[in-house]
Amino acid sequence: MMSVFLSARPAAALALAACGAVLLASMPTAASAAESAQRVTPPVASPVAASGATPASASSTTMAVPSSAASAAPSDQRPADRFAVFTSASAAAAIAKPAPSRQAIYTAAPTSDRVVKSRAMGDYRIRVAVPTTPPPADGYPVVYVLDGDDYFDPGVKLADHLVRTSNGSMTPGVIVGVGYPGDSRRSYDYLPASPISADIERRPDGRPIIDDVYGGADGFLDFLDQELKPLIQAAYPIDPQRQSLYGHSYGGLLAVHALFTRPDMFQTYLLSSPSLGWNGRYVLTEEPGFNARVQGGTHRIATVVTVGEYEQALSPEQLRAPDAAERAARAARRRSVDSDRDLSARLNAVAPDRVGSRFRMFPGEVHGNRGAARVCVRPADSLCRAALRGALGPVARRPSAMQGWLTHRSAMAYR
Figure: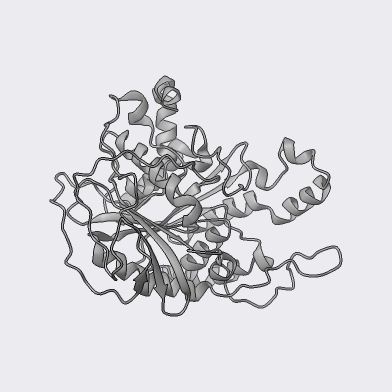
């Protein structure tokens, strides 16, 4: 992997660097000239009961801040496919600058790995990776990663590599993986309550194509906002102005729902192949309310929207499948690439001085098979990298500066 990075030309490196966008921090901010010593927050009772702690953490309701001296190598677990939460690459420094630091930014094992019991939504497996470096003066940026069972490990490994090879241009941040201790409940947790749309996709026999169980999205967002975020903020020094939410597929749909209905919840929303077509594009009916709130408010929001080329057309391999005609018709109806591109364009237009969006369609990529081992192992695996720089890069906390950053990065990386 490193041989590919080191053999690439600096121009390619810059393009990769600008592609990066989502790890931790919703609103990118200017990097502090001098980082403060790590602040250790005293144990604070969390409103969430916790149990099932691994050896990395005690079974209490608080999370311990790690020592900044740890330097174990990143985990060797194989990354999950379509890890768009850390998709794109800040590879300019890695390719054109001196060799990367050998000191790991994150320890091999999660700083904390425990089961958190929600008051209303059941149990969640919460894994946290905290940098070994001291926090900035305002605290670490943080990214909450949906489908954490698949995306936490590869995200931490990629974040470690990108930060170490950024020549100091990216701020290490806290990564929080939100998963399940047992069977996944993602369909219920990620899909909003809604009546069956008249425009819903239907099977040949006329039955609507919709999940058997759904409608818990707002309860899940309440858990994130009212239970998990306070728990994380009590345990670690977090910058409240640099919080990001990442989701892929149904997770991306949930992130769009959160953006439209709770724009204050995060500063950056990382939307990887969001399932906008679900239930007759119901989530887009929430967009007018979002527009009115943002245009009448002071929100400063950044979004990154990514999609694969073969989400609207079939890949050569898919064309050989027995059901290729049916798949092609379904992909054409869903218009995933066009829909994602249009969403990003509308977000850029709603309040140009305060809201910005970047869009990237990655050639040769499909929607993704969560769990396939090929992802995040190649520097060119764009869909594994499309989010880090926007969340961790040095950008001033001013609306004009944010918009300038978005425009500049878009011109460099997304044309």
